[in-house]
Amino acid sequence: MGGNSRSQADSALKTMTRLLVERIGGLDATVAALSEGGRQVRRSILSAYQSQHSDRWIPGDLIARLEEVAGEPLITAELARRAGFVLVRANGAAGECVMHKLAHLAADYADLQRATTEGLADGHLCEEDLARIERGAMELHRAIGNLLSTIQARRNKPGMMVIVEGGTRRGMAGVLAAVRGIWARRPEAKL
Image 1 (spheres, rainbow, N blue to C red):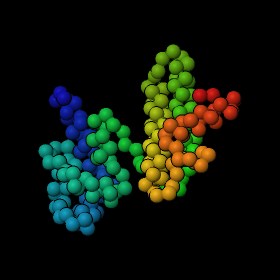
Image 2: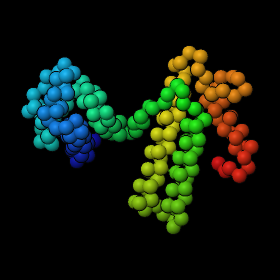
Image 3: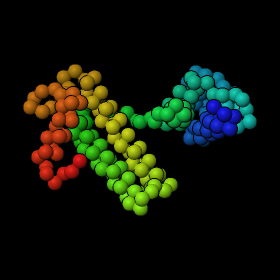
Image 4: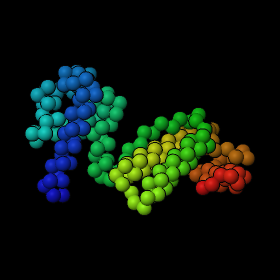
């Protein structure tokens, strides 16, 4: 990684640390939140963790505690982004309907296709088109994560079915077969 890109990556981590401290309510609120978690951190050290001019970095255990308090994984998401990944909130619950989640996934996919088609209508993708496509892809990614977390939540509950069709437990292949069956029965629906 070159010097310039390294400094940009470091800057992004410092910025995410600052935003995390702001989400919690500032330096004093953050020090108090860490104290409740059993860790004593001085205000000056916490200030250095978010300073662009300091070579001090926030340790992983503090990141975990602060992201838990803030309710948002700002630094973890930045680290994932740097590694080429995107985080998705796992918000599935065992009682949720898998087909309902799959319907949301299909709608998000259709939105992504529409954004791409509209963006290419003039023969090229401008920055606005790319931003709209990126938002659509993120929504689709979230929908896939939601579907998977619902399936996982159902699997962790004894006696719960992943999806029921004809009284049998079906895995992801069964979900896809069920969707193909729905599309086949509805000729007006287009993939």
